Image (tube, rainbow, N blue to C red; front, side, top):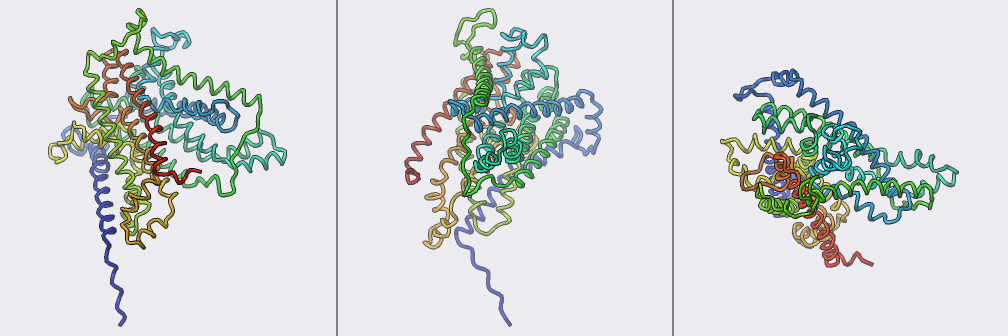
Length: 558
């Protein structure tokens, strides 16, 4: 009788990998799955905790104002998505298909809105087009407080994300296709419809999904400049903070989660169908000089860049004016934050952003390494990768409200975290986890698989090989993840607006509170303080990145 082979005993590395995978999955369970489950349970219970079935939905649909918010949200989502995608498409086309002077400068200016909280464009638009705005006559008597302000503010905020997606896709075009089109006597119009559009169709659809998700889930712009034009994100805030109606807040959060999940699922499907655009024989596309085309895109990109800079500059100017519009002398008094302890809030934001960048980057890289380079335990690795993709589909406001329902329960042993800095850091890491995870996975995929095999043959721990080899080789991606987490932690408001305590007020929340109290100039000052901090961090990241790359990756240089 043939005996079955005995299973190979687990090595120390295998045991450590299994333990780390299980630990990170448990962390996701506590920080993401259980809070989202709690918000779904709350959405279908009454005020006394009893199951209400579909009664809450009937009550919601019977409330005209709430039903109108859903319609307004979808309307704004579609309108801003089409506008931003169109503007970003032309801008990205100019960056990649025209001979633009100062092309790097145009790229940098397009990314400026990422460094500002979403409240900043709303405040700036008030000073530009409000009742006392310098350009109020441009609106022809229409009010900036409403759909017009929401469209302009969200367009400013979402524009850089669309440009990044589209310019990346256009920049990966194979120059041989354009050369073939030219040889076959196809003009620029034919090359556009036969080469450019087919090559970026999936990226274009993905951009539509991403921008739509960002627009319908943003809280800052409609809160500051939306006026009486209600949207789902502001309804959640009003139901929870204004009326203390947590059940209805949970139900609205569930409704907000549905279109975001749909857009996320559609984007994931598109990414799987998106074929590689380049191969080893591809040639970079270099546009030929064309005075008419180059002149048009220089003018267009200059106007867009000027508009982006004008929004930031207006907020900066408003933060320095003594008393708008009656006393335009410059002062730094608004940076004193007399009505609130603004400098403590700013210090809390720096601390939270630093901790988020440090622990978030370490966790993201370790989890990505276990998923991509780990051995065996394929079930746990797939589970971890799936959990890592979920936060991208969860709006920050929904995540923050879910944390209230889960961590604020008296019977929950994790209740001690509520209102503290630890929970703010955890929520921010979870909120922005997916992009960092995908960045780290992409970097690890580029490493040769022989690294782990050679480490095993030399009886070196794969985790030691990760520390000594994989991490230095992936340092550019690690630095990108760190600055991404830091900047977003400084600027976010939706995920933390429900979670701060008396001693953990954040700068982004202080902007919201100052605006609520009518102190718009100090709110602009705090928003500009956040902007300059994010800008300084980005410049420091670029400088430190060059130095570290010379030390760790000098072998890559010619």
